[in-house]
Amino acid sequence: MPTALPVILFDDGRGELAPLTDLRPAFDVRVGALTLLERITLMTGRPPAGLIVPPHLEAVCREKWPSVPVNDRIAATVDCLLVNGRWAVASSEALREVDELGGTPADDRGEPLGHRVSPSQLAAFVRGAPIDAKGSRSDGLTEGSHALLRPWDARKLRDRALAIDLDLLLRLRPESAALTAGVTLIGDRGFNAAATARLLPSVVLDTEHGPIVIDEHAVVRPGAIVIGPAYIGPHSTVLDRAVIRGNTAIGPFCKVAGEVSGTVFQGYANKAHDGFLGDSWLGEWVNLGAGTTNSNLLNTYSEVICRATPDGPNERTGETFLGAIIGDHIKTAICTRIMTGSILHTGSMFATTAPVSGTVGRFTWATDAGSRAYRFDKFLDVARAAMARRRVEPSAAYIDRLRALHDGR
Image (spheres, rainbow, N blue to C red):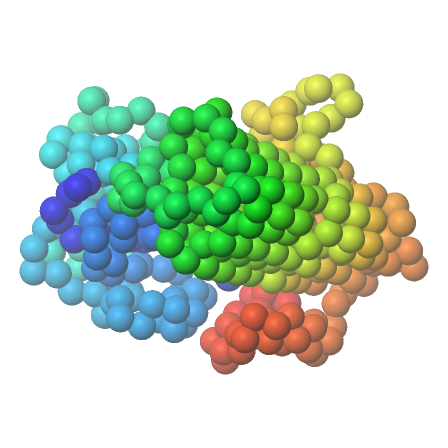
């Protein structure tokens, strides 16, 4: 158990994290197998006691987590652990040390990531007052208090977050379902398949370099190879002859084919055809056309330089292997090529013979005739059709948030 205290998650809105956080708070971004909210829920055995989010995300959060108090509805009568949603690698050990040592770990810019707070401090924080960290201790805290500040930090923190999550899942689910005849398991680094998962004959599971967890109602089709460390989320399908390489995490309700390496799928995304996808992050409702392929390494083998926003400055990412950050509702045509370090913001459509490169703003309609704004009514029709295929109807709050993003609000 990380702490017996109730946990309050907050999104401080710091950094430049779009498109990761356009439609969700930072604690709901999948960096490893789990989001931070999912990890906290599994570690403590209960959902967070409250969520603090920026005003533009309040309506969608109240809708997604109706039983959890949001913002001004939060009240506490005991001490709580206040955890920054950008702390994507918060482990049970780190949370326990914050609680027991009274430390205040900070991100690379000195922004606090975790506090133990009294009811009065929490009430003041909800009203917008900063936490007084005077006298707090950082010595002795578990190494690794780095947090999300830029979209490419999802790649930077991926391996550590995935290791934390796979270890947690294997500890909570020590007994795996029996393997179907014809499924080959290699290695002994850890494996768990849920009882409702389906692994068909000729599937190969390679755990020599890390564990594999296959969650409820997931399907791995014939001929697929899954190499750990890897996670296949609920109701997701790894299609025939796919190769899922290490450090990949596939969220719920995805369809994945081709060669995938070191990539995190937030959920509800399709890569259902051949093509390579490496060291990338995909938002929800992404659909990659057949043959879509990205580059994750420069020909010079040098550090990848990116812009978080189209008009932002060039920044060092610290990464040599960095594919693409692909925002929610992105669509690509067949044989689309995506260059190293591309940042594709929410709601865009790409159907160009030239490669997609650099940082592309929200709701861009890109063809060989040029780029223009994607009309919102047309975008919404496509979004509704895509979501209906998973029996999901976008709510009024969700549509309002999409419209605000389209309008630049």
